[in-house]
Image 1 (cartoon, helix red, strand yellow):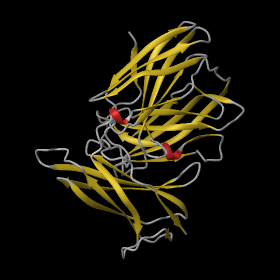
Image 2 (cartoon, one colour):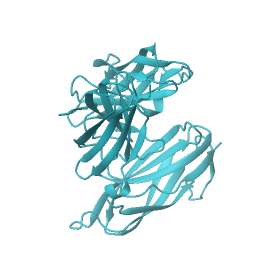
Image 3 (cartoon, one colour):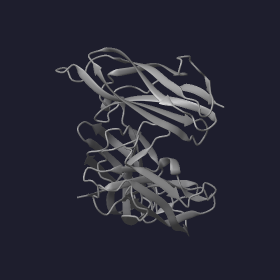
Image 4 (cartoon, one colour):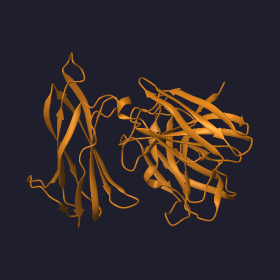
Length: 355
């Protein structure tokens, strides 16, 4: 019987973070060949009260793969510069290929409610020989109801393999997507020219809209497979987002703003039917994400608005924003219920220039 190891627990809190949590990345300037992706490091508290740090390490070296990637996380409270705990861990993949990347997940030693901060640093790594792409993974079934049920197949066509593992890295609907958790299925020894079935039946974060599926053994790796959790497996959308605009404090619509000036991001939402028929109410959280355009978009701002639909009809949401950096930005909007499940398709994109 396969042994299933969850690299992270069920995550209760998600982007935007609670004000009680933040993360600092140190010793990882973007000019380095190997570095922590500072835009994709997130701090959560799991269902048992442990603090979890999830992120990505990138290897931009086109000549050399790396191994033994060690990451250190210092957990702090809000009062002291002395860490409550120091935990070291490694990336999900033992070997990160040339121009490749790997997730990591590090959890605090104790379920300490005083932890409010995490400082993440890359301690070191070693050069490695490249692993050959001798593994193939694909999904055979994905089903999401009260829990996530997944089955797939690993094909080993290279040579007998040991320490074979399949990984699922779940991500949310933001752009670029944010890694929520990583689950690992241990398959152990796999013979040559063998197909091995595997499955996972666990609760996952309800904001997951898909996952990256990949595998690694002692000598082989697989390609990364992007598996979506399709609309048919997500509850029907109750709400439609429309007429997203940027306005000044006088209500004039804008396409350009100045750094430091206050603006209002405004949109309309139309609810088709109430989620709770008995109370005729639908509690929701409205999210705005402002991200810089480009190949590696920088997230400038994430804002939230908590509201409650009464019956059906239309409502207007407004979130204040003060831009801090010049550039061209996309404004994205989302509506989720209080169980962190999307109840609307993403709103229309809006472009704004910051001078």
